[in-house]
Each structure stands twice: as structure tokens, then as C-alpha cells.
Length: 275
Ligand SMILES: NC(=O)c1ccc[n+]([C@@H]2O[C@H](COP(=O)([O-])OP(=O)(O)OC[C@H]3O[C@@H](n4cnc5c(N)ncnc54)[C@H](O)[C@@H]3O)[C@@H](O)[C@H]2O)c1
Image 1 (cartoon, helix red, strand yellow):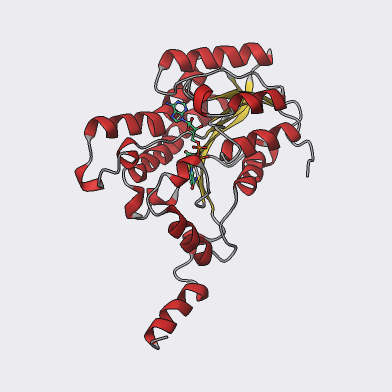
Image 2: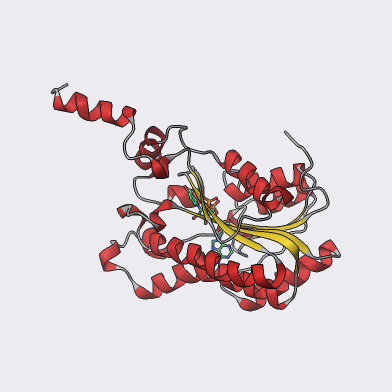
């Protein structure tokens, strides 16, 4: 399905590590919709990921950048402006990592050096990115900036650990920076709160498979896939959503507004009846 709704637009896409990455699907669909893409990922992704293969496939420049480094961010924005020979219309921030979750530290016994790094990579990088774009006057008017979030920013999901706090901060930056970028340049800033999705980062969360199945049974439409998330991103990069900004937009098949589903109720009824 392609309607060329991003024809001629220029976009930077962070975080396409491998074929399972949400950003990978977004890059493919943006390309199919006519956009010019610059890909970026952490330097370590050159060793552990396949971002370079996607870059070749989409004929997209690949500029490695560690999102915690200001100079890397500036180099990325400068490189993208040069590659496009023009300004940027959209950006996807699809970056997340929790050291305490990775080290399996209980939330109540977190290491603060790790937590600092988690917030730096997963949240402050979004502010750093937008500040760099703004100072370089790199975005076209009516541009669109998106980051990916998760509902643990609003409700407690114990195994999500400190990433819940990281996502809460990420969503706050979308509101706070979104105000200033809207006033200055009509640039819109939003987060998409996506269903559990089977990716490298997603699978790092404890008990991910049980969690994935729970969300799938809870949501009237089931879990949203990475491909469907990419379609939603395309719509938010397009000119059809120019007045949507400073929002956290749920893309979760209805999970966020469902109290209990009939599927899950059946399990409790069976238990009550001793089945
Ligand atoms: N998978 C899920 O269930 C799910 C659900 C909701 C939201 N999200 C969010 O979607 C986004 C993308 O994650 P994904 O699930 O596609 O997993 P992924 O592992 O494919 O992507 C995470 C990316 O972050 C990059 N990254 C990590 N540290 C970095 C650094 N210092 N500098 C630059 N890049 C760095 C990784 O290289 C990787 O490409 C994340 O923000 C994640 O929290 C994921």
C-alpha cells in the first residue's frame, strides 16, 4: 500500500537495529511513501545490528550517532542537512535502553549510575535531539517529530522497571518542547504509545511473552504490530495531521481504555467454577 503521501519529504529515522525493530518498518514504509531517509543508530549497532543492510536497501545515508553525545547529534543533523540538500520534515526517535532492567536489578534496588544512563539514552536524548534541530534551524515549518513510548508511563507494570520513569519523562518532553517548537516553527511533537512488540528492546523486559499475550487478549483489536505502528507514523509525518501536537497517542488496539476483556473474564469465571 503506497499513496506517496510523503513524496519529497526528508526524514531522519533513529533505531533500526534489525528487521524486527519498529524503526526498520517505519523506514521501509516512509521510503515506499516517497520520502528521502537518513538512518542513524548507535556506533555499536555497526557490530550488533543490520542497519547498514537497510541503508543499502533504501539507498539511505547512514550516520552513526550515540544519542547521549551532543557532538554526535550535531554531526548527525549537519550530515542530514547536507545529504538532503535541504531541511528536514520529520524525525522518528525510536531509542530505548534500561541498564537496571538489563542487569535484572529490582526496581527497589536500582543502581543510580545505571538509572542516569537509562534516562540519558531513553529520554534526555529526545530533548537533546530537538534542541540540536532547533538551534541549527534544521526543520521545515510544519515538520513532525515523533518518539515511541509505552503505557507504563501512566500505569504501573512492575517488570517494566525504570523504563516507566524514562517514558514518563519522554512524554513530558513532547509536551514541553512541543509547545516551544510549535510557537517557533509550527513543528509538531508527539509520542506514540505502542502495544508490546516482539523486538530486541521489547524482549528485554522480564516475562515479555506472558505480557504480550495478556495485552493481546485484553485489547479488543489485539496488539498492534510493528508494521501497523509504521503506518501510524507515516500518517503523523504526513500533511494530514498538521494540527496534532504535544500528544501521547495510544496505538494499542484499545488496550489503554479497556478495564477487562471477555476473553480474560472467561479465565476468572472458569477458576471460580473450579474448572
Ligand atoms: N517493543 C516494544 O514492546 C515497545 C513497545 C512500546 C514502545 N517501544 C519503544 O520503541 C522504541 C524502539 O524499540 P524497539 O522495540 O523497536 O527495539 P530495538 O531494540 O529494535 O530498538 C532500540 C534501538 O535503540 C538504539 N539505541 C540504544 N542505545 C542507543 C544510543 N546510546 N544511541 C543511539 N541509539 C541507541 C538501539 O541500537 C536500537 O536500534 C523504544 O523507544 C522502545 O522503548 C517498544
